[in-house]
Length: 165
Ligand code: PNS
Image (cartoon, rainbow, N blue to C red):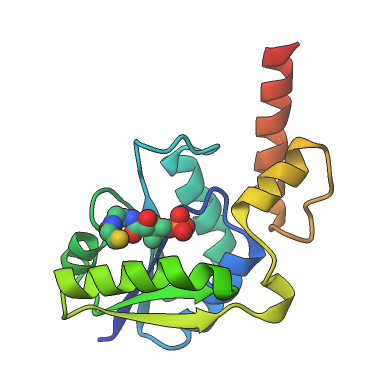
């Protein structure tokens, strides 16, 4: 059984991530979306919220599972018995960091291959950071994220506003 991991922060999931999930899940028997729980970063959404948003957004794809992880990606891949890590490449600016990560991971575990999918052109500019910035200033994010995520971001932003009032 070919099982792959698509890891990320997903803070929050965007249409760019979903494009990679749809396309990579068609290439394998099972795709595990690995949501990084990293205490060193302060994400907008908790890992539970990020997992839930991803589950809602991928509920229509039968071979996709969403699982949080901590620590090394390669340990998670081994625990899940996955031989492949999928990453999306948007532009040349992603390349340097992605190459470093893939090569480090290959050194740590040569059994796990990193496979890159190029992001579809219509999502090439998109990132979770851009979505949060637009939302923070009240811009329309409906073309960047699914409806469930848009609602969640708006909830978060209005809570933040009421705290600062
Ligand atoms: O969505 P992101 O933030 O670009 O995802 C980055 C992620 C989660 C894939 C990366 O930070 C990661 O794999 N972190 C786990 C720690 C690890 O294994 N580091 C060694 C690889 S350099």
